Image (cartoon, protein in one colour):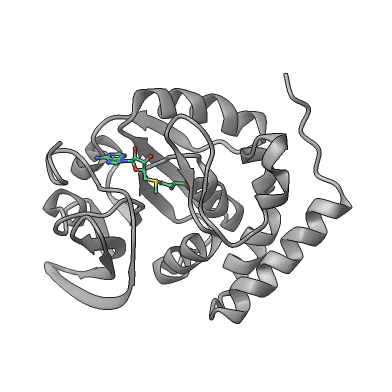
Amino acid sequence: MRVLTDDYKHRGLRKALVKTIQKKGIKDESVLQAIGAVPRHFFFDPAFLEHAYEDKAFPIGEGQTISQPYTVAFQTELLKVKPNDKVLEIGTGSGYQACVLLEIGAAVFTIEYNRSLYELTKRKLPSMGYTPYFMHGDGSKGWKSQSPYDKILVTAGAPNVPSALTAQLNDGGILVIPVGNDKKQRMLRVTRKGDKLFKEEFNYFSFVPLLGEQGWNK
Ligand code: SAM
């Protein structure tokens, strides 16, 4: 098994990455600290180590991409995560975003549709000291038995806001989700206040599609 080390060189590269995303507009100190804490190089093959702290998405095998740190920071900042928040993440992928949420002190429930990715990440994260609750399945329907959630974060592009997700939000709860077509999606923040939902619109991004019953149904 590969031995994972996090030395001064990695920590230095992380500091530089934090500066980069700060310059791009991320202000929330807890988000910047979390990006500065998660050893992103643990997700990379040693051959590609020099790419681990670039502000770029990167393919890391199994047809999988680790998200761009700025995108992770942007979504996390919009979500206004606080310690002890109960957060549902749709699209576990590499698990990097889940680690960022855990670093902030949230309890994280994460769902992945692709079985081999689910298996891989479920094995990998605890070996790095990160322990979210994992589920394999269609996250467009949420995770009803564990609901309600303070925050829900969707890390794949949806055609619409799934009603199953807004139904699983606490009063005052927040959903962050990219919504659009297969090429670009607008980042939305939906806040529940009683029976009412308030929607705010942010920048455009490009995510892989949210599949499943309340996704692209593929
Ligand atoms: N959050 C991830 C990370 O930190 O690496 C990146 C997620 S990647 C951009 C999107 C993920 O959503 C993919 O792994 C994809 O398999 C997953 N996905 C797509 N539709 C899904 C669904 N209905 N339920 C759960 N996961 C889904």
